[in-house]
Length: 295
Length: 240
Image (cartoon, rainbow over all chains, first blue to last red; front, top):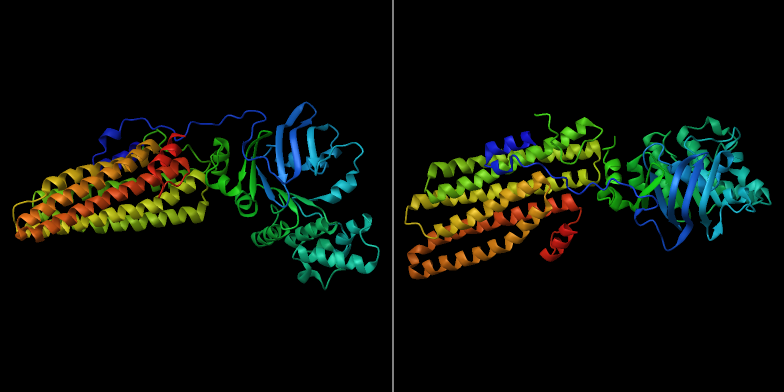
């Protein structure tokens, strides 16, 4: 502060301000109250209704009493520092955590009013409804065609070869990949570029006509051009799907999502309209994180 | 620089970003101090009939213009390099707007200095200078406080300036009426009184710019745009 005043004092008399200590702008609201989320965590037209969700890895509480609605056809971004629980929470939504032995999920998680964790629920069917795209593109070591056709085939979505062809073409078109690969559908998928592989994985996810697509850092292994293409795709897909995206890139969250949820140490600190989060967030911790003041 | 942290907002992980934002604030306050002094000198040159000081004040405008460009460039670079968000974004956006206000204040000071030169050449008995002095003290105080509110991120002080602006408008109206009576008394006063009226008008504008700066400070601190908003509503925003 001294430097600032010294400059000014030389120009005009600001002496009376010199020795006053500087106040904080707002009282630091950097405290988290468990189970309390600032902003607008609930929605009228909820696809997912999640209440008092807790996730435990053995004794360790990775998710602490989170309640959130995810609306139909919205793109919601989960952001937060590493280890804040955003990926864990995302993986609850299609029971990907089931494969981890020590992991247990508590609370009420409903998809269209049905309990996600109902023991009678068919997990394979659930994952067809709630598809997932991972951080690293993971195509099967098969042809481009087979990568997309695999899901519809095992879910019995196509009876004839021509139906399957249609699904493959449509999915690849929606993923913005058709023009690039239509002449080499039999080529092996692993020979594609990273960005193409990721879009292929998105095509694979949407081939089974899911209602929701979960994306776990879908662009972190992609170059800026491929990233831009995937982001463009997210915008188009949001017309027919609900999209939940975990991202480390705050700019990406700002660009693609309608709402942004900020996670911190297993708590859901703030959920708000993305425009609000990036211009004037309500919670001090959200502010610190998105402005790069953490630590 | 001392060991004291001079960033009221707390530190970024990136020190470079920190220092860029601090530099922006410091340079803005420097420009503020400059135009404040410019207005003060312009009024002084008028009241003292000091042609030399008036000329000096007029030339000072070039420096202010230079700082305006430098600050705009700095703000543009911060946006390009850092993609600031939230309070950082509000700071940068506000500075860009407030710099324009300061530059206009500089222009008003230049206008006053020119009129001071003209009046000193005519060399007649002063008319309406009491009013000029009175309003100039008031608007300079507002300008000073608006910069102070910026430096301290004090939205309460900024709100006070918004309220003051109405009083300056009233004072300006009253002063204009006084000058009108002088003109009616003796029509040889008209030319001179019109010049003084120009000075008053310029000062009233300085008050408006101080008010704009105050509104930007409230935006920076509270995240709410209070332009074209009744003072009562702004009060709620600042109070809540």
